[in-house]
Every structure is written in C-alpha cells, then in structure tokens.
Image 1 (cartoon, rainbow, N blue to C red):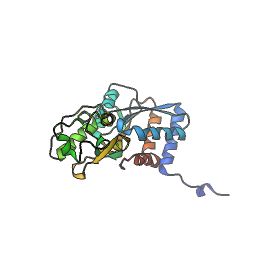
Image 2: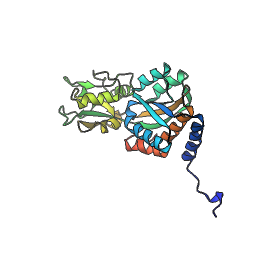
Image 3: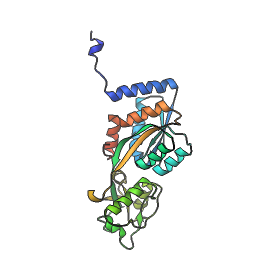
Image 4: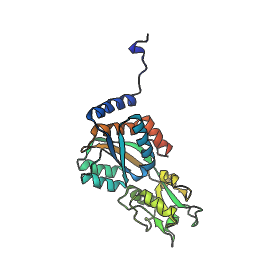
Length: 252
C-alpha cells in the first residue's frame, strides 16, 4: 500500500488555488466580480468559464471597459472584487486611492498594430500613412491606455499623433474600422487578430512599437475577497496563462 510520502505532489498553483477556494467556500461566497480592460474580453470570458467549471457554485461576473473608466468606477465605490488593467498608470490610480489590497501583479503584455478595412483600400503601410491628408483615423481617447500607447508610438516614429476619433475603448476602434467608418486605427495586436474578416493588420515595427503591461489586483472593498484571490491566482496559473497566450498575449 503506497504511503502518503509516495503520493504525487500537486503543483504550487494547484495547492494555492485549493487553499484559497477552501476559504471562499467557508465564506459562503457565490460570485466574483471582475472589472477588466476591454482588450481582455475574449480570454477572460474563457478563463471565467474555466474557473467556474473548476469551482462549481462560483459565478464570475465581468465588467469590460476602458481601464480609465473602470478605475473611475472603482474609486467611486462600485462593488468589484478584482481589477485587471491594460496599463500600470490606471492601476496606480486605484492604489493611490487606497482601493487595492496587496501588490498588483503583471500577468500579461501586449503590443500595438494598425488595422485597416478589408483590402486596405488606402494602401496603409505604416504609421506615417495615417497622417496623410484625407485620412479618417480611429483612435482611443488619450485617457484610455491604448490611446496613450498609440500617442507614444507616433512619438517614437517622430511624428505627432494625427487627428482622430476619441473612442471609449479599443473595441470601439475596431468597430469603427470594421464598419468602414475609418480608414485605419491603432489597436492591440490581440484585438487586431480578433477583429474578424472585415479588417486587416498592418504591423508596427519594433522601433516604433510600445509594449503594454497588464497588472491585476484584488480590491480592498471586495464583496468576496477570498474569491477575488482565487481568481487572481487562476489568471497567474499555467491554465490561465495558456488561455492568454492562445489569444496572442505575451507572457509577463
């Protein structure tokens, strides 16, 4: 008969999840509310389903929006358990407001790309083409992480950001371009890949590109602090990281 010493050891993340989920079950919590950047919509929906399947009785509720919108809601006391931002600046606002429990952890990175309507009718080959006369450009608002990152990319290319729309988040930029309401837009590579058949991607070279860092944290006012810690642990675990990688996110 095998001894307890012979039993296989579970990986560290599995043991951590077990401890956190035990605490969650004893607290009687049934839901985890996650405020997440719009660019995380596809992978986090998958992660949420996987988390629920692994932990019956727990429901993950998402609020996807621009990180600047989410942090404003958090500071104004909107009930949330977890905040996942597309930038460290907006996470720092939550930290400075005293709304974050513990230390935020970077769980993924991303890069920028240009998207154009199918067929690339304006023959866009790089950032400089977005400044041509007569071009209609879709950009996120400067307060939105991808809007600020786009401005940084234009600066690295030695040019001012062209006049463009001020969209509420990256998904709105994709929508404008996919509906032929804009000749080009600057988004994350992950959103460019998820844009479907109505858009095409134009790469931004490394010298002009910007790497976005995504931090995640539990919130001090979390209605379900144990569930929040469990969800954050899952995002950082190998299963969560595989989902993010499958969506095109870079490892932290």
